[in-house]
Figure 1 (cartoon, one colour):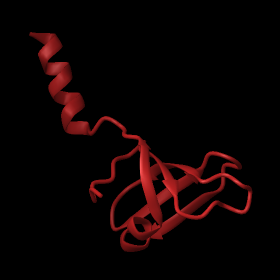
Figure 2 (cartoon, one colour):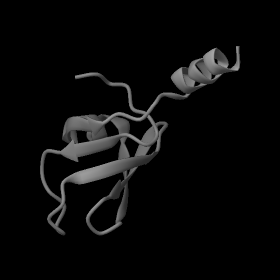
Figure 3 (cartoon, one colour):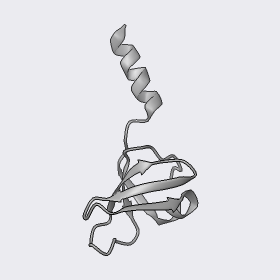
Figure 4 (spheres, helix red, strand yellow):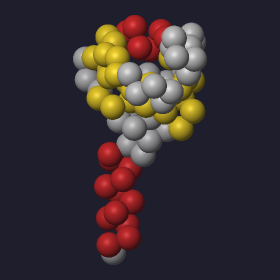
Length: 77
């Protein structure tokens, strides 16, 4: 599985949150990853290594900032 994490990615975790949802949105990246539960809105911050271990799959990948810039520059020409 790829280790690239982008702001806005929607991911599924291996175990569900106590609210019952296992779908999360990445709201901050860096040395730590901050994710928000789609079921109850709870925000959790995890070490990058812990996040990668708990992540099951990426459900919806966000557009990386570099790709968004390239796409805008293509439309501007």
